[in-house]
Structures are given as structure tokens and as C-alpha cells.
Image (tube, rainbow, N blue to C red):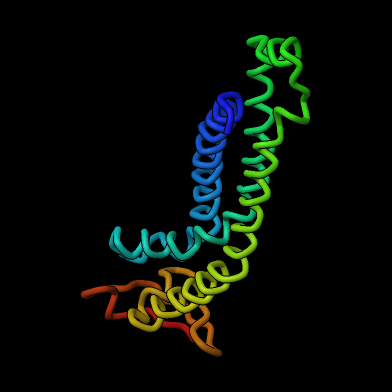
Length: 176
């Protein structure tokens, strides 16, 4: 691999990693917002919330990866153009296609890895995510019931005015 190829790949990888982490964090925050009803007010410890989000995280990768590839490419080559590095490449006889060859190889390998990730890891994570959400409700049934609103437990709708005791064990003002 030539020095120019290493430089282009290094510049792209740094930008790609940064963009991927930022977008991943944004999408995780969106996931927290989507599942706030499952997480808030249930007296869950930090480990359980981290486990919940770790099962949700692999489903975000197919959303974040294409955006990261696009933004990293635009930012990297924009930086090259801004710093007149493209002009230096052109003056030394290197075409745009030649300068992008290493990135094409990298993105091809990345797409193969993403395919296997989406084919193997995401279905398993989705399965664990759904089971974990159900287990939270089964292990602590009182957590599935929110105070002052109707909650569906099995085939029944239950409204509880107040929960008390350890882990909301005692219910008062129950309407079924």
C-alpha cells in the first residue's frame, strides 16, 4: 500500500469513526426516548438499563452505517479539497478514481461485514431485546403496572391508584 493510500484511508477512518460514534449516540438517545415508558418509573437499576440498551443497539447499526459512510466521505474529500491536497494529487498525475480506490476496497469489505452483522447479530439481539422486555414485566409484575393509568397485563386492562411496599408489591385502588 502506498503512502498516499495510507494517508487517505487514515483520514477517512478517523472521520468515519467520529461520525459513527456521534450518530450512534444520537440514535441511542432516540431509542431511549422511544422506550421511555418501559424504562422510567420502574425502579430499574443502571445495569438493567445498560443491558436493555445493549440489546437495542445492534438494530441501530444499519441506520447509522450508511449515514456514516456518506458523511465521512464528504467530510474527508471536502477537507482534501479545502487544503489543496486534491490539487497536489492532480498535479502529480493521480486521478480521482485512483485516489478513491483504497476507500472503495474498504467500503466493499465494510459492506460484507455489515451484511453478516445484519444477518446474524441483529436477529439474535432483537430476540434477546423482546425477551428482556417481557422478562422485566414477568419478574416484577408490579413494574408492568403504572400508577394512575391503564396498563395491559395479559388480556386485562388494570388501573392502579397507588403502589406501595417493596418493588410496588402492594396495590391499592385497583380497577380491572
